[in-house]
Image (cartoon, rainbow, N blue to C red; front, side):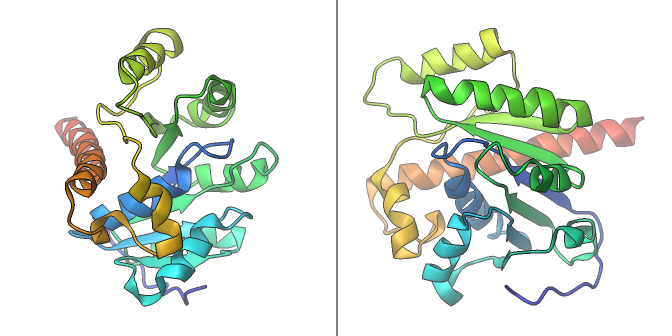
Length: 230
């Protein structure tokens, strides 16, 4: 674990990546969204998932990560995250339904929750349970992020957009994360999306996470404007 510098900072955002079922793209989104945002701001990724997938990925990357990283943070430290000198802190949370105490500690400090959802029906119930039992009662701003979308399957994206919008009635990102082999290979290679080789397919992969980051910043800017107007 990196030695954290408890200096204190100005305004920051704490983002929790939440998905209480494995395989939805939580870790991939944590690492790649952090990489994109680190191009213009100070970013820390914190891994509190006992499975430590993010930690393993960061270990493969070594000193090449474009953001700071900390693993195995004591739950008591979560309440002190705002004392750190970062613009954005992204937290990868447990990927199962058993570690609710850790999830609770994270959500108590989070400003925003991202809920990755890949197009598998069995992932819907755990996500809904997470929103209704943990996220919504706290009034935390949140968005579903459709991930692992296979554009070779006609209508898949549109069907899942309608499902989230009309049946689940949950807010979602307009941008989705498409299915690319580069994302699956990245942890073993120790790469994040901003370090992918310059190919046409990789440019699309970079586009997806870049636009999710832009959308997130736009959401925050609109929230700030509303607060200032009031």
